Image 1 (cartoon, rainbow, N blue to C red):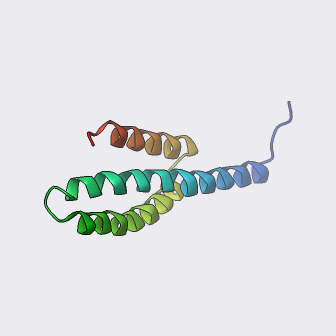
Image 2 (spheres, rainbow, N blue to C red; image 1 turned 135 degrees about the horizontal axis):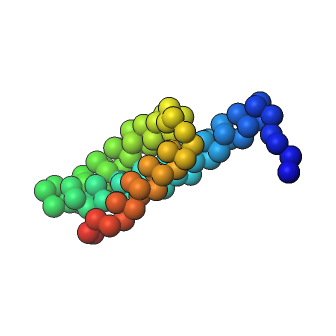
Length: 93
């Protein structure tokens, strides 16, 4: 089995973090946006709730991207995003 050099391993990890940040961050922020809009619809008109959820999703998406690159390991970045997504999926509609 061929062993990767330190530079190749670093490039692979940066590429993997970029993919996780882009696609995982999008999925998590979209899910959080929908859940937040549904929760806000209980106390405000539906169009305002949808707009609130959408605007906060941009902030959340940026925060997820930054955090993914700041996480100590690639495994931790993946597991936290999966855990957060799982928790959001378990919340009632």
